Amino acid sequence: MNILITGSNGQLGNEFRQLESNYKEHKFFFTDVDDLDITDAEKSAKFIKSNSIQACVNCAGYTAVDKAENDKVHAMLVNATAVKNLASACAKVNALFVHISTDYVFEGKNHKPYTENDTASPKSIYGKTKLDGEIEVIFNAKRALIFRTSWLYSSFGNNFVKTMVEKGKSLGELRVVYDQIGSPTYAADLAEAILNIIEKVPSKMRTEIYNFSNEGITSWYDFAKAIFDIKNIDCNVLPVPSKDYKTDAVRPFYSILDKSKVKKDFGITIPYWRDSLKRCLDLL
Image (cartoon, rainbow, N blue to C red; front, side, top):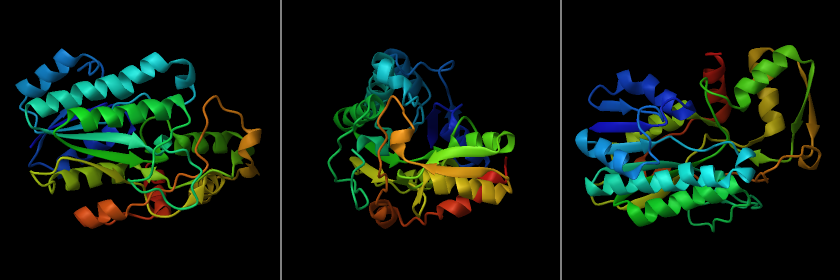
């Protein structure tokens, strides 16, 4: 297949770059904003058609959660309008469109793992624009997969894991919230899963939503403790409630995603979060 990866300079996009040599049967087109402006519908359609793209994985996104609260126009442009452009362009050539979404589409007050059928009710501008992006996929794509993921990290880009390593080495003590629960997702695992899955997508499949995160459950506090433990960093971590850690955007308190559907439909095995964390930390 000819596979387009947008947002390829980000965390997930870079993980696809790392996997390219393992999937030599495919031809990859890696683009970012300087190569392809996906907010331009005409340019997006022309690129996909002229390069005979058969699958497009959209890794681009406005992910500055707090900044989005005062930058809704830009967040909507990247997280929804650009998604519509890509979904429509793929539909015109019957290409498979793969879009990355987030646990932020949920309110985050559940007491059991969220399934793909649970009602979305985002409480932040970021979450609302990501949900709008999902809706654009549903209405404009012919064949599409939407992957909702949570707590994404990588050895590339800016993320919680790299921040903890950097601050842990320079500070003797850190305060981390303990009452937000979720499942970390190693971007390398998500990228590999997507490449394996798109090879198995039935030609008659329309649009489906799937949850994907690493197995297991933790809090941000325990996540930080695990990072320091694995990296042998001597830093005292103090657990603090979310109410003492003010942010512009509301964070989900509960972000556990039920992954039964993706495992059943595609027969994939998902690694435990701490095992994947160790693999990532070995690279830092």
